[in-house]
Length: 194
Picture 1 (cartoon, rainbow, N blue to C red):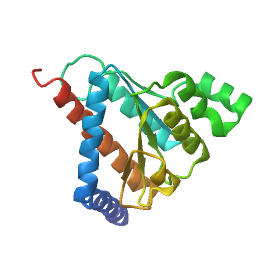
Picture 2: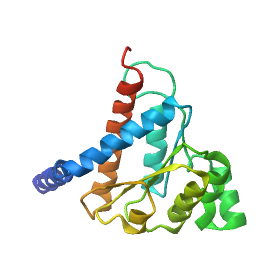
Picture 3: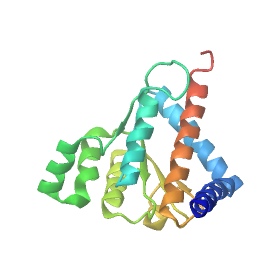
């Protein structure tokens, strides 16, 4: 049991260390993400989130924070997660291949001025890259939440939020933290009087 406690403490400390190591430049990019998202929402656009595996769950979680709320009562904000509809995912995967499951949805759901948010710890998933390319064609503002290197997404997006870690667990924990911070800042920006 004592050994478990040491392992637990070590993992908590590493999770904190990753988040505390965010550079000032990364903090500024997170702020830009919040500002651009608030502006898009104020203009009648939406946020579209997507990722694979744990990042898919994180995308669903973060889209829900915008639709429902993070803090106090406020009007619902338009956001959706592309991994949330298994019928569309399996039909697109069956008919067009797994690499196209997000691009196919983006072709029909994303409009000019929307914010398209890709979550990928590696930044190299073919279906994420195709989705970003489809978002570029649709005129979306492109954001990627990745790990340290940014992978191939680094050169394909308008804003890269690359967490300073190569450990998928720590990266995903930081992605949720970034998402909560951005949601909070957007709420403050759009609903100051509430």
